Image 1 (tube, rainbow, N blue to C red):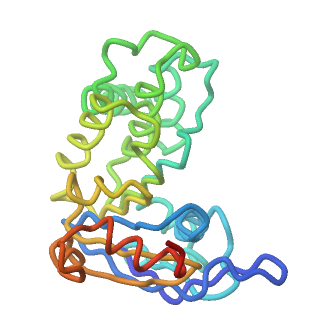
Image 2 (cartoon, rainbow, N blue to C red):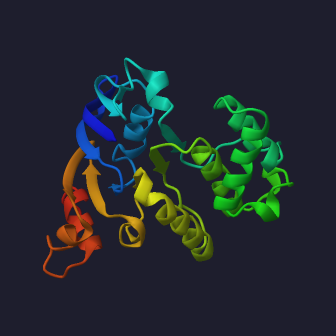
Length: 240
């Protein structure tokens, strides 16, 4: 469903992403892991068409994000970092607005909004302004807009960063519920996400892939079997 082909991004003389390639089939939840500044968000923005690559491309459900951006974006649900939205809008109205942008109108739009409010557990706040919500509810509102068109590929950038344990649990349960029917990529620096929801993980640092495998395979790279040790060994550049 998702194929990333040698993506590179240069900002002036700085090469932020140095040739990232991976595939994500239906039914897989890929953890895209790396320290701050590793190139995770830049890669996500290139995959989703928000940032043009210097070279390389991403193919989503057969649509090249460069040559067929409309077709590619129609297959993507995107939850950006920090869950941006129109915070002055009522949750229900915001989701109706997103549904209409996605091409749904009338009864169908209403059904789409009702469905994502249920999936994202937003019923208690559906009539409230987004600006008045807790961070967890704002995150789930943005999650709802990302899935309103039932995308085949779901891209999530730091979906649980800053949430309390209960809020994290809710978001992770929502991801698990959808994982069988979608290809999901979760960009994060939170290692516990791997054990919680991921079936595979890619670790990057300095704009390059350092490891790619199942959680068990990655843990086996260290005698202690600890993912945090493996992560540090691969990404700290020799620092202690």
